[in-house]
Image (tube, rainbow, N blue to C red; front, side, top):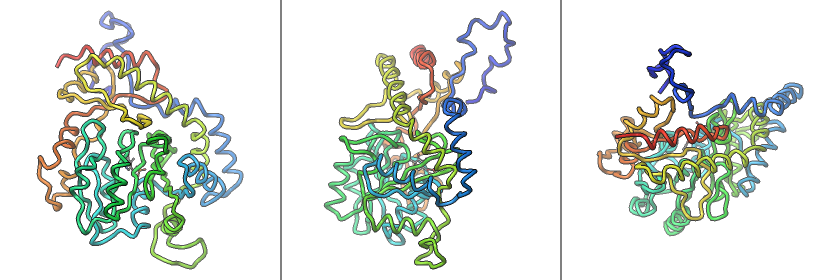
Amino acid sequence: MSLDNNPRKETPIGSAAVANEEDRRRVRLGNLTGQYQAIRAEIDSAYAEVMSRGAFILGPELKQLESEIAALCGVEHGIGVNSGTDALLISLLALGIGEGDEVITTPFTFFATAETISLTGARPVFADIDPATFTIDPTAVEAAVTSKTRAILPVHLYGQAADMDSLSAIAERNGLKVIEDAAQIIGGSYKGRPAGSLGDIAAFSFYPTKNLGAFGDGGMIVTDNAELAEQARLLRFHGSGGSYFYKRVGYCSRLDEMQAAFLRVKLRHLDEWNALRRSHAAIYSARLAASVVTSPVEAPGCKHIYHQYTIRSRHRDALKQHLAECGVDSGIYYPQALHLQEVYANLGYLPGSMPQAEAAAREVLSLPVYPELKSDDIEYVAARILDFQP
Ligand SMILES: *Cc1c(COP(=O)(O)O)cnc(C)c1O
């Protein structure tokens, strides 16, 4: 909710009606300008270097970033693309998924997860989530497997890995591929293994508000499989190896040098930023332990990187309103599960068919948890939740 909806805005500063500092406090969901200011010298020098080099597409910065992200994930290959959405689409196409195929995914995610399955010509098949972690429930996945199923596409939602051991076992038993939607988990891990190394291929997003965000759009595919990497490289560049000879129909989907250079600067700070998010989350969870809201859990073996710190409340809308009146922004990711979206009416899912995803869509609320958040702001947000009367 924006400041314009806050009635206190009308109160002139310094008037008797302004009780204290607390009354004017504003806590946003992110502070990208503040983050830039903190690393300005590094970003500005990266900019100057790219400008003076004069190479803007498929140059040395991208090559370096691709090896750095691959190394972070403990895999061999990184392929930079235009966006996280393209990273998903190209991963699916590299695996040969298309018309007549089914891909099992979660209904509780950003639309691009299912949209890219549809774009290949395949059919997204939804499997409900585990209400504790918000990630796809392996039991539901197993039940959704048919003779047409080609792959499972789990999402590491909010920065926490899905139950990958169970999903890999199902994939193994049924001869399926696993594509990780790793858009929200860069730097996170599962049982000591980095996200991005947990399936056959993985897609990251560098959307500005992600834990590692560009100053624009960007994404990356990572994989240990040389053949998939080669297909992904072809697909991002018109199906060509870079000369004017074409092996398949592809896309114009490259991560440009400027964004790659900026991302390389930010990558040096990622560990520290993820650690700050984790420590903010720990403070919230301690303060909210005695409250009526449900705090997020870190599943055993998972290193959650809190892309979002997401609580649940049966009075979610009233709580969001209360926070807005106190100057605290909050987000709903996501207000409608994908199986009930208008665009997927043709798939024939009915309300009630994915009860956990539908309940989550009604109850989730994400609180400010960005690295630059001040500790007194965290205390303020927690206190306003504690004094919420449904
Ligand atoms: C952000 C996101 C995407 C898409 O990434 P873009 O870079 O915005 O295209 C896909 N899946 C999930 C889960 C995301 O959060």
